[in-house]
Image (cartoon, rainbow, N blue to C red; front, top):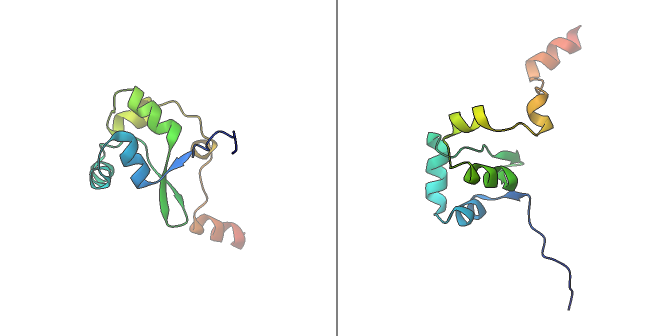
Length: 96
Protein backbone atom coordinates (compact mmCIF):
# COMPACT_ATOMS: atom_id res chain seq x y z
CA UNK A 1 0.00 0.00 0.00
CA UNK A 2 1.21 3.45 -0.84
CA UNK A 3 0.91 6.34 1.61
CA UNK A 4 1.13 8.93 -1.15
CA UNK A 5 -1.55 11.60 -1.13
CA UNK A 6 -3.98 11.51 -4.05
CA UNK A 7 -3.23 13.94 -6.86
CA UNK A 8 -5.66 16.85 -7.10
CA UNK A 9 -5.92 18.11 -10.68
CA UNK A 10 -5.37 21.82 -11.28
CA UNK A 11 -7.58 21.79 -14.38
CA UNK A 12 -11.11 20.38 -14.22
CA UNK A 13 -13.27 18.93 -16.97
CA UNK A 14 -16.91 19.84 -17.50
CA UNK A 15 -18.04 16.84 -15.46
CA UNK A 16 -15.63 17.67 -12.64
CA UNK A 17 -16.80 21.30 -12.55
CA UNK A 18 -20.40 20.08 -12.39
CA UNK A 19 -19.52 17.75 -9.51
CA UNK A 20 -17.67 20.54 -7.68
CA UNK A 21 -20.76 22.77 -7.91
CA UNK A 22 -23.22 19.94 -7.27
CA UNK A 23 -25.11 20.42 -10.54
CA UNK A 24 -25.32 18.64 -13.88
CA UNK A 25 -23.03 19.23 -16.86
CA UNK A 26 -25.92 20.63 -18.91
CA UNK A 27 -26.39 23.44 -16.40
CA UNK A 28 -22.65 24.22 -16.52
CA UNK A 29 -22.85 24.46 -20.34
CA UNK A 30 -25.85 26.77 -20.05
CA UNK A 31 -24.17 28.94 -17.40
CA UNK A 32 -21.04 29.20 -19.55
CA UNK A 33 -23.05 30.09 -22.68
CA UNK A 34 -25.08 32.88 -21.06
CA UNK A 35 -22.33 34.34 -18.85
CA UNK A 36 -23.47 33.14 -15.43
CA UNK A 37 -20.32 31.02 -15.01
CA UNK A 38 -17.62 33.54 -14.05
CA UNK A 39 -14.36 31.75 -14.82
CA UNK A 40 -13.50 31.15 -18.44
CA UNK A 41 -12.14 27.76 -19.46
CA UNK A 42 -8.73 27.23 -21.02
CA UNK A 43 -8.28 25.14 -24.15
CA UNK A 44 -6.05 22.10 -24.13
CA UNK A 45 -6.34 20.59 -27.57
CA UNK A 46 -10.08 20.23 -28.10
CA UNK A 47 -10.85 20.08 -24.40
CA UNK A 48 -12.19 22.93 -22.31
CA UNK A 49 -10.83 22.87 -18.79
CA UNK A 50 -11.41 25.18 -15.85
CA UNK A 51 -8.78 26.21 -13.29
CA UNK A 52 -9.65 24.72 -9.90
CA UNK A 53 -8.27 27.67 -7.93
CA UNK A 54 -10.20 30.17 -10.01
CA UNK A 55 -13.44 28.21 -9.55
CA UNK A 56 -12.86 28.01 -5.80
CA UNK A 57 -12.21 31.77 -5.63
CA UNK A 58 -15.34 32.39 -7.72
CA UNK A 59 -17.42 30.25 -5.36
CA UNK A 60 -15.96 32.05 -2.31
CA UNK A 61 -16.83 35.43 -3.85
CA UNK A 62 -20.51 34.51 -4.18
CA UNK A 63 -20.75 33.19 -7.77
CA UNK A 64 -20.86 36.54 -9.61
CA UNK A 65 -21.65 36.55 -13.35
CA UNK A 66 -18.74 36.59 -15.79
CA UNK A 67 -18.78 40.36 -16.42
CA UNK A 68 -18.53 41.17 -12.70
CA UNK A 69 -16.05 38.34 -12.06
CA UNK A 70 -13.74 39.48 -14.86
CA UNK A 71 -13.77 43.06 -13.53
CA UNK A 72 -13.27 42.15 -9.86
CA UNK A 73 -10.99 39.12 -9.86
CA UNK A 74 -7.30 39.45 -9.13
CA UNK A 75 -5.14 38.79 -12.17
CA UNK A 76 -2.57 36.17 -11.24
CA UNK A 77 -1.85 34.55 -14.59
CA UNK A 78 0.87 35.41 -17.04
CA UNK A 79 -1.44 34.58 -19.96
CA UNK A 80 -3.62 37.58 -19.09
CA UNK A 81 -0.66 39.96 -19.10
CA UNK A 82 0.78 39.04 -22.50
CA UNK A 83 -1.44 39.39 -25.59
CA UNK A 84 -1.15 36.65 -28.19
CA UNK A 85 -0.04 37.38 -31.72
CA UNK A 86 -2.63 36.75 -34.36
CA UNK A 87 -1.84 35.12 -37.68
CA UNK A 88 -2.28 38.49 -39.38
CA UNK A 89 0.28 40.18 -37.11
CA UNK A 90 2.75 37.32 -37.63
CA UNK A 91 2.28 37.57 -41.41
CA UNK A 92 2.89 41.33 -41.31
CA UNK A 93 6.02 40.82 -39.22
CA UNK A 94 7.30 38.21 -41.68
CA UNK A 95 6.90 40.63 -44.60
CA UNK A 96 8.92 43.32 -42.83
